[in-house]
Image (cartoon, rainbow over all chains, first blue to last red; front, side):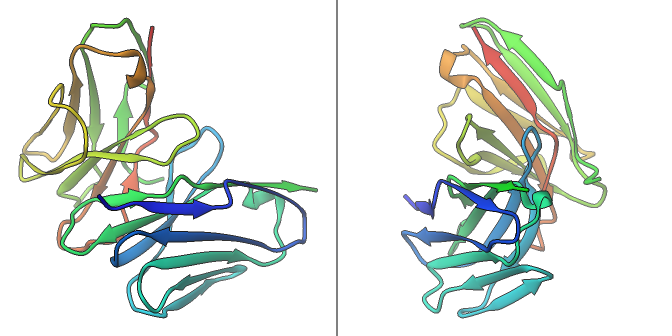
Length: 111
Length: 113
């Protein structure tokens, strides 16, 4: 079945440093979505990428979708304490109805 | 505020019992998906409902079943609870014609003793 791997599992940064999480799918994806889950909370949608090679930005967050539509990344520039949480990628396989989530990257930001 | 609500917030059951979890989807959304999130893991897809019928299922046994009602609200039923069923159960609603963002509810934390 479809698998989505995410690295690293955990990253601890100083406030102001950059952060990147990477996502790789075992199969080609129709689209990939990114979610953020705060401690004790539920996943909150951040963005969806659909096109091969697509790059989208949301303020300090930059999302990329690979040319082969099998990998993606989320980069946060100059992290802030409000960025703390677990970031999940979730891929929608071709012809599928359900998202396959990665295991997430937990980000801790030290002030 | 996503508009998706779930009840109860927390639940404690013993092994072998049955449980029903409830979800009210966001206004205008006709598709409901259920996920199981074990501690430290990403959500795992259980099944999806559209027009009151199961519209896709993940790798979960038949003792996990569901319902969707005409108002698009949904239930997740789990029979013969096992210790490994302890998890956060998330409901997410979406529009079938837009295979994009899913709006997650706050979840139900189930503990099986």
